[in-house]
Length: 105
Image (cartoon, rainbow, N blue to C red; front, side, top):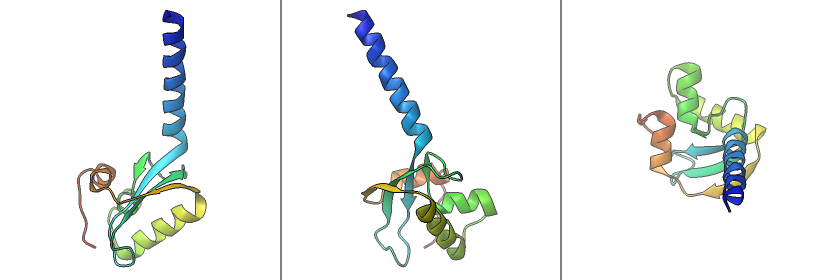
């Protein structure tokens, strides 16, 4: 019995590590062309974090958020990764990605 628990725990740990290193939860906030926003599960892209957003990427890369930067980040991520799952927008996940900061539409 104890051996099966250890095996199960090892499988869960390996699965968690694999998910954390291979996917990104990408949160697109409500903006002009996408007024309802979206959350997508994508394959990991070299510049993305586990929970990320275009605004968080702009903040990391350019020390600021602009409409142009948002568009470039979304285009780059969508072009270089595969969408695995589409979900509704999550303000909570967006807040995690930006460290609690919010930006104007």
